[in-house]
Amino acid sequence: MRPIVLLSATLLMLLLNSACSSQETSQKNINNAMSSFPEFDLQGHRGARGLLPENTIPSFLKTLEYEIKTLEFDVVVSADSKIVLSHEPWFHHHISTKPNGEPVTPDVALQHNMFRMTYTEIAEYDVGKRGHMLFPEQMPMPAVKPLMRDAIIAVEEYIVETGRESIFYNIETKSQEEWYDVFVPQPEVFARLLYNELKELDVLHKVFIQSFDVRTLQEMRAIDPNVPLVLLVQNLYGLEENLRLLGFTPDVYSPNYRLVDEEMVKEVHAKGMKIVPWTINDTKTMKTITNMGVDGLITDYPNRAVTVKPIRQRLGLN
Image 1 (cartoon, one colour):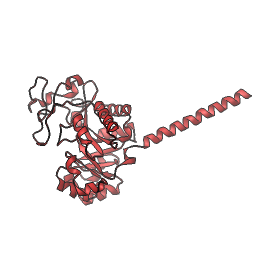
Image 2 (cartoon, rainbow, N blue to C red):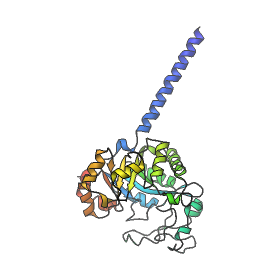
Image 3 (cartoon, rainbow, N blue to C red):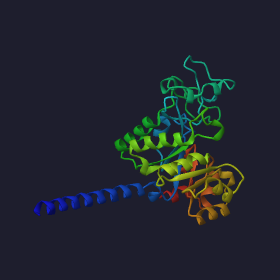
Image 4 (cartoon, rainbow, N blue to C red):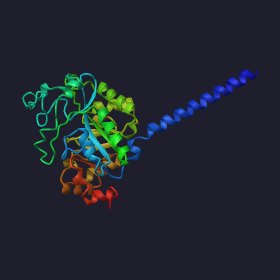
């Protein structure tokens, strides 16, 4: 009889250990970005787009010099299924230079489709040395579109080296229905590739996924309902219709700042969401929007934002 008792005790210990492990895993999943959402979520748009080339590692590291809470950036997918930082799934004519040194022009920009290029080919293009005609304060410098993996690793290493407060990542899937299988993969493929890489990097607990494309948000929710989701909005449909199209209530509602008024802020909060408008670059508007009671804002100029008194107060700097 004794061996049976020992076996039962062993099985009991295994079951207890398994239960504890499952509980720890569940708790880790719950410990997501929303559980530690900052008092005011100041986000650097594409890094610090107004200061250095957008969606590049130098721009991200520059952003970290300011009291931002979140790095906002965009991702696309290469032909070899790599997650690449880029606002468009092609090389935009405002900033891009071909490997042969010629600028990408408007008439051929769409032909430089990253969904049809390997990352090795993508990395041969420059996206910084021309500067940006719409951002005269941006310092031109040689730069490439990095892999998301490399950008996040660089940021995490910088945080360790400098002792800076950790940050969140607000990652936008650059996707829309007419692009499927032409410029981007199907939403379920896009979401799975992105999720798997973030999981491998062990940063899911400080990530938001945002999109104008409700399909990628729906697919991400199906993969892991603990990942905070952000609905980007630039239409005039209104709050109720946008939520109906999405099919659920996201964690954050992120409209173009021109759509925001105090009534919207109240309605969003009443539904249990945060509201973080985009993209605000002048300090007067930053002050006005912040005083409406929003939960954060996205800007190309984090250096300007940290001079605005209401923002400084919300960040605990005064």
